[in-house]
Image 1 (cartoon, one colour):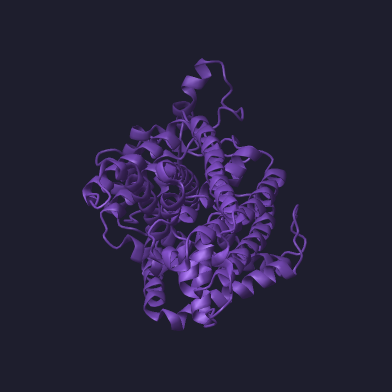
Image 2 (cartoon, rainbow, N blue to C red):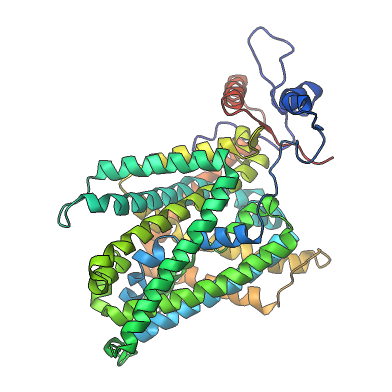
Length: 520
């Protein structure tokens, strides 16, 4: 991410040309000419430029169902269908594996309760970035944004795109024939571009599609659960005998097993990225969390029981896609249903991830931590088109990287640290802002327990995987010079300011975007 221009939120951009003393204003600058540019068409239709509907700003288009669909859409990605083996691979026993899945669900619910308080106390989009900025200041927030934009978001998009492509292409190849890498990359790139376009231009269509896919995902997992329970009712419970025999007790391996479980629960905090677009967030944000997390935990535990009933521990460890192996073993000719469900889940999860992560990029740019053009909004669709396109480009670049999974490994510990930092903001605000309005106020022990568990999960892997932790820290630290050059350094060279201004103006014309218009 070339950070060529990062400016303060209050700075105004003007178009500079070599022989022009009084340059014309860029669309969206808060002056008369800029407003006229953005609102002429709407005024011709008889709409008020000052009405809430005509302002160039993010619209509150998400209700409770859409909020639940966003959380479930992210959590029920392809992870539960592909990689539950990460837990049992570390602990090696069925009983301990199920306990870890339950504990990961409880930990996610505890964390989600903390995010409910944060999201209703600080009703801003951006999620972790917004909370870290509010509590701990500019540099920690920038470093989180740096890691998210450079690693977390584009690599996750790339992996989800490749997962979708693999399951779509697999039926066209023999079982012993490997799918060409170029074919997977091209289909993944096309999918990312299509979903970016959909999220840029048709928000209503996107949210309706995500609602439908949410029910499809739940149906797929319920199918797996029913099949597994029926299998157990037929007397096939031998895999659960001696469920805790020879279980692994090494703290390092247990923490890695927790990471594998938590990875499948990841996404419970993503609705907080879109708080400003949620109708009645004080009610719908906590309600969406309260509905989603218990449902996810119950479904995940039952789905893993079904996997473990049909497959042995060694079969799960040997499988690259557990749901597919499960289907091949028990569904026979109907086994093609499972890859289809995995493909639909990956597609829906990718759409939700593209939508939510673009809001974090948008808020970061609005606060001066990213190039200013990324804080602009389409004057017709009221979506952050520049941020969506920017992340689309980064995601496609990541598709060409052969070490995408390695990058995720490097930064998983760092991401856990930032989540811990976000939740610790609950405690920080309780101490520094006791009178802050808190529509949702959790018991004090909840954030304390979550922070302590996260601290354990961050510290223990330092001696289990020191190289990976070191690389994650290095990637984060590299962002510090970009912060001082892009954010702190105000007197930038004139040629740089001119270049970025021209680029911003061109992007505004291409994307028909403008600066956000705030309420008076």
